[in-house]
Length: 77
Image 1 (cartoon, rainbow, N blue to C red):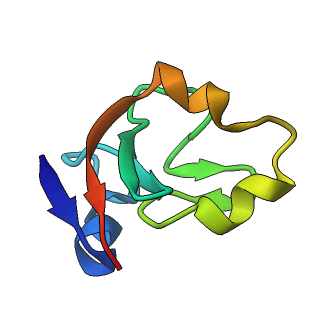
Image 2 (tube, rainbow, N blue to C red; image 1 turned 120 degrees about the vertical axis):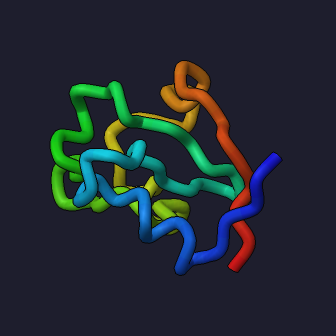
């Protein structure tokens, strides 16, 4: 499984249509390319291409919603 650091993950922020859209959460990297909830790499005020672990506590849902997403790698700071 691919290992992403912060610099590598930034490449998958939705700004390049040739790249998929990813975000990290609790050490895993998720593919959200086909999710209508991340339009152009943004979900409400949260950007893709970064670690969203610290923001999940503010979300109106828990991390069970991530079970529907594909894990594409590991995130290491």
